[in-house]
Length: 423
Image (cartoon, rainbow, N blue to C red; front, side, top):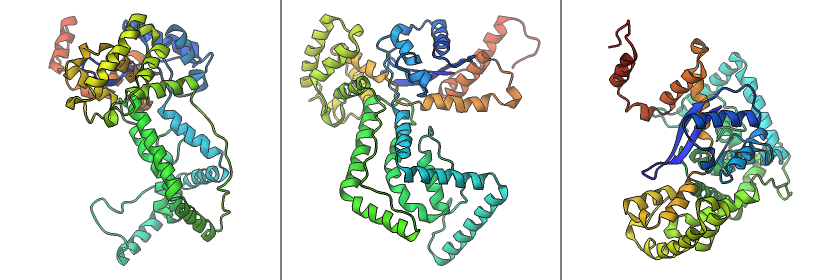
C-alpha cells in the first residue's frame, strides 16, 4: 500500500509527495486503516487534521458504511472522500457497457490485440504488411518523409483504469486499419482531459473547469456537428456491412458521485478566480465553511468570514495584481505575495482546505510503477523500510538532487568506525 500526502506548503504551493509504502497481510478496511495510522503516528501527524482522502475506488475503500473512507470519517469528519479523476475513467467504461455496440467494439479490439500479441509470427506479419503499405504510400506521395515520421507501431491494449488507454488503443488501430477512423472523434474530445488529470498537484477547481469545458465541447458536437458525424458513422456501417445502432435509444444514467460530494464541489467553485472571479458568491462560500468545515471556524469567525468576503470583493476584484489568475493555488500565492493574506486570513484558510481535496490518483499509481523498477528480481528480498527509503529517493528525485552526498557519508562515518573507505 502506497501513501501519498497532499498539502499546501508555506509558499502556498499545492504539493503531492510520496510518503511511504506499507506491506499488509490483508486488504480489509480495518487493516489498511491501521497501517496508515501507524505511519502517520510515527511522523507525529494527527488523523484529526486530515481534510481529504482518495483511494483506488475498490469497495473496501469507498464503502459508505464500512469502507476505509468511512472509518477515517469517524475520526476526522472533515476528511472528505472525493475520488474525482479516476471516477471519470470508470464512468466512461460503465457508459460503454450500457451501449452494446460500443462495448462489442472494444471487446473485439481486445481480441485483436490478444491474437496479434501472443504470436511473434503474427506480430511480424502485421509489421511487414504495414511497412509495405507505407512504402507504397511514400512512393505515391500520399505520405511525406521526415525525421521521426512513419515509424513502426504496435497495437495497444485498452485498460479500464488506465487514463487515455482507450483513445490510444483506437489511435494505434487506425494506423493499422484506417477503417476505424470514425470511432475516434468523441474519444478525442475527452483525451485532453484524461492527460491533464495525470499531472501532479492539480487543484479541484481547475478540474471542474476542465470537465465543464469538455462537456461544452461534447454539447457543441451534438448541436452543430452531429448530423455530419452520424453521416460518417452511417457511411462506415454501410460500407462495412455493419448493423447501424439506434441513436435515438435511451440509456441508463449512472451517477457515481454522492449528493454531498457534488454539493462540496459546487460550493467550492465559488472561490474560483478565473474570468475575473465570475463564479464568486458570498453565500455559497459561507455555506461551504459552515456545512463542510464547521470545526475549522468558530461562530465568531463565521461572521467575520462574511465581512472579509465583502471587503475582499471590492478590494481584490479591482486590484490589477489579481487579474488573469488561472487557478485557486495561484490565488493563494498571490495573497501571500501582496501581503493580503494577513487581512483575508479566514479566506486563505478556507482556500487551503479546498486545495487539499484529492483530484487524481496519478501520483499513487506512479509509485506502484516505480516499485517495479526499484524492487527487481535481483532485489526481491528488500524489506519495507529499505524499499520505502529507496522509493522516496527515486520518486521525489527533484528533492534528492539537493542532498549533498558528502554530508551523508560524513554522517555515516560519525555513527561508528568503518572498515572500508567510502570516499
